[in-house]
Image (tube, rainbow, N blue to C red):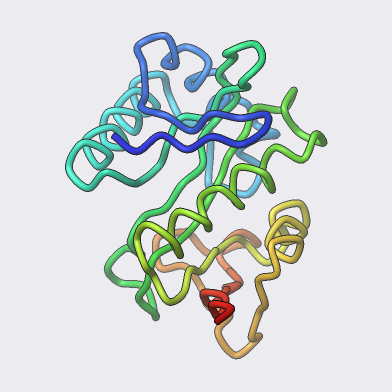
Length: 180
């Protein structure tokens, strides 16, 4: 298991104790504002099981995120290969936090740890991030990470019904050149 630590956060394996707060996070309409809908408890539990299976199999994926000081589960962050059917390939970085964790810089901090792992331990040349075109908060995190967007890569997500959530943007970050 590859646990990632920052000054304030621990990105780790999923635990049974994460399931109730994960389900609450995914049932929150404000957290799920840029997704087609909220998730049921069963859907949330199934996603956590898939995330842990990926971590067990690959050693990386979508980690549970907790605060280092209190050990409180606040959401997830990590990496995952882009799904089949998308108009591009690569490895995606992402995050989703419970509302009380918003506005503290946790998403950016967790994503920096994830990118460090991607470029360091995994040796990836590039990482991308996706969101709906209207998700200003996630786009701001992407910019703070140094990711850039090429509007020519904007696309309509084939898994999202017609409407304002279908249009997505892609941000990319290349591995920094090693100082020599």
